[in-house]
Image (spheres, rainbow, N blue to C red):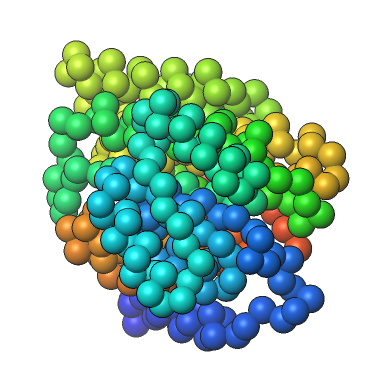
Length: 313
């Protein structure tokens, strides 16, 4: 058996293990949440986001499903409600600051705040072996800046509790800094993003803006950016870096006001975003997000996960 076959065998074994784990219900002493626990899932009208909303609601959490388009979001909520789940809808465009503010005002007025934020909303315009950066501006603005908008806007509304509030962002292994196949080969840029002690929002923003400038002037291909799905990979790399940065900042919060933030890779999922070319089902893809959101003893923050296991950045 060669390395590729062994890796495939290990992956399949892990998938079977997780499928078994998902059948084991949480015990009463593990359940820190109740129907009063509010979870917001962005971009949840279909795919991974819809399944995350479904699974969280199935565990008894009250879920707010958001979508940029009202009609499809309301239809998605109707499907979940018909299954007896406690899910509501609100329109949200994460790149529109007015929309984000309107959503925050509604959450505060309707629920008094939230306990869980799942940043799932995102876009990708590359399929198969394509690597166009034609829509790089939209990809970076949505996947990174939009996600950052949500984290910044909702942190003040996260309710105090002994269990701590939770933020989980859907990212990708494609955004790993040191990937041999798809990492950043520009050493100085990589070092800046690697050093969590000196990492700042400005460093991350400047890196993304530098890439977008090079896309506009046509020099991006020679600057050491990832070789596969370049704009998408960089947008997720930025979210990964921002996760580490926010974990460092949030760790200073006192007991009872803790907020734990992590990110995870769902794998190559059979959804519209991948052109249905993935090999992981939405149900499997949603699992790690739900697991992180509901961890009974949540002392984990600033980490990157895949298939319920920590992986490196």
